[in-house]
Image (cartoon, rainbow, N blue to C red; front, side, top):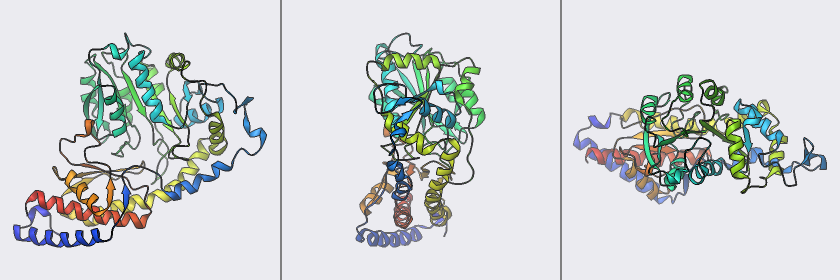
Length: 424
């Protein structure tokens, strides 16, 4: 195979004709394949469904002398706080254990800043003339949507091989209207980047103009390797404290892709001062979250070592799916020089950059054949990719045999879009 840019017009026309025939044949199969979101597949759900059979003995409902079936413990069971603290590398006193959704906790943190102000806010954000928020991109569309919902002005920060461009971040935070930034520090969504130690330390050492500037540190994939050994990561809360900014950061995590999405447990971690402020704001809102489910997860996951053993079982399911994606791209797309992509070792996504101006067309063709993927542009603020290039591939949900079909469709559609862009 020759690079498409080197083909003569007649060669491009011949190639496109063959692809059109393949496209029509695939369309005739009536496929219904979904790679739109990073949802665990059935094999992963089956792997952990024994979680639901726990707590058959009355003593299982008692944790540190607390009856988990009753009201109380708004900040979560002490045992659940200890479990998350061990996984994240922070102190139990810094952990608030909530319900089933870290996104809900993130939204609520932003909402508290908007309606009441965070710990160091001069006033609630709703009283500010303008609130700006930094969005590393390609990034997570649901993050962007949260801050967009509150009317914040979203500012794109480019991603690099080691995390967000800290030169751009350091320049941006000189503006007191910039109130925060979204971060996914390990296997970032969708880039699969692990922030370097230098990047993490520079984040901890930021000196923003806004006294209530907040780093929203979504550590969603903190134990989610699917290739190689577990990669440890620094405790950002300790680094912030050492740098003299203990209250600048909220860290989030959940068991959504460790046990059962939608039936897991989520947490945030922050300084003790932030914790006291947030508990004051949450007290009128929450009596307690689902402590029965928190206890179920404590009994099931036990500790960090046991959790990492479970994640190796997840890796045995996930690894072949990601290899299917990357191997297909290496074979079908690499020689054509029409795209680039990352090769993550963990997380849930492959970040793919098509020829500029072809992402939307590629995914429209995929949809026509019956393959659903995350919308083009979703990985940028306001859903607008300035290059119309980035595509988030989510291999986790389909079994490998369906994923092979979906990738065959994707490659045909990508090639067609590239040839159309080059001129056929």
